[in-house]
Length: 214
Length: 161
Image (cartoon, rainbow over all chains, first blue to last red; front, top):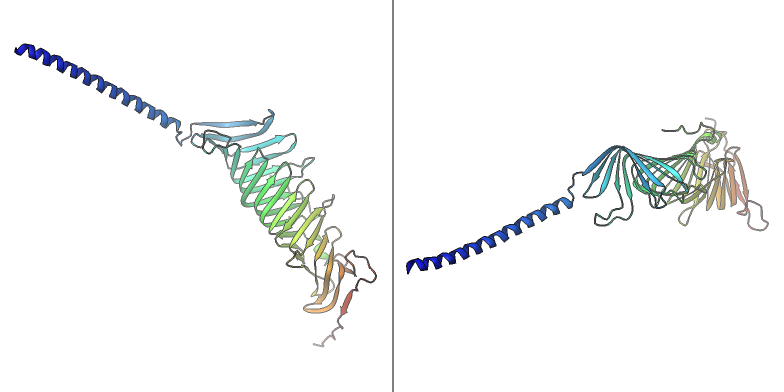
C-alpha cells in the first residue's frame, strides 16, 4: 500500500512544484518588464545635463515665408533637454527682413527658449534672453536712424519684433545719448518707451558728431 | 547767457516714449531741461526734431504745476532772469523760450527783482537777451484783451562801500 500512496503523493507534489515555478516565473517576468519601463521613463523625462552641443556655429531661423528671420552665431551652443532651451556663449544675432530695419546684437550669454511642445507650459513663440554686456545696434537706414543700445539684460521676442528689459539701459543715437531703467522697443513700429529715470543728453550741434562707439 | 548756446541740452524725465519714424519724443512724470545755466522744469514735454536735427521742445505744466525757468543773464556778475507759465516752448536753433498763458518773467540782480512782467505771452531770447511780451497767447497784440504788466524797480543807489 505504501508505494502506491507515495506515487500519488509524488504526483501531487510534482503538480504543486510545477505550479510554483510557473507563478514565480510570471512574477519574475512582470518585474523585469516593470523595471525596464522605469528606465525608459527616466531617460525621456530629460536629464538636466546637456544632450548635445555645437561649437562655432551659425543657426538660421526661417520665418514662415521661408526667408531668413534671424541668424545667431556663437562660440558654443548647448541644448538643455529638460527645458528644451539653447544656451549660447558670446552670441551674435543678426535679424534681417526686407520690411524691417536690420538689427545686430551681441552679448556674453544668450538663452534661447524656442517654440516647444516638449515643455509644460507649452511655448508658442521664441524668446531670446541676452545677458551681460548686451549691445544692440541698428545701422542708419532709409526708414531708421542709427541706434546703439547697451544694457545688462535684453529680452528679444523675434516673432513680435519686440526688445525689452527692466534693467538700466543706455541708448546712443546720432543726436543724443539717453539712459533709463526699463525699456520696451518695437522694431517694426519703431516705437521705443523708456520706463523710468529717463535722462536724455542732446549732443552739441557744433561739436564733432558723437564718436562711433564700436 | 550766450555761453549757454554751445552747451549740450540735458533733459530728464520719469517716463519717455520716442517714435523712430516721426522722431517725436514724449516725456512725462516730471521733466527738467538743463542747458548751461538755463534750467526749465515742467510736468510733460514733447520734443520734436527739425530736419536739420535741431530740437524743438514744448513743455506743459499739467494740472499740478506750472512750467518754470531760470537762467543767468549777461552783463553783470549776478544777473538772472526767471519765469513761469502754463506752457513753454524752447527752440534749440533760435534759443528762444516762449512762455504762454499766465506768464510771468522777472529780472533779478542777485535776489533783488529789478523788473517784472506778467502777461499772456512772454518770450525771452537768451542768445540776444531780448524779451517780448503781449497780451494774447498767440504772441500778437489783441486789442481789449487785458494788458501786459511791467513793474520796474528803481535803480539802487550804489552804496559807497
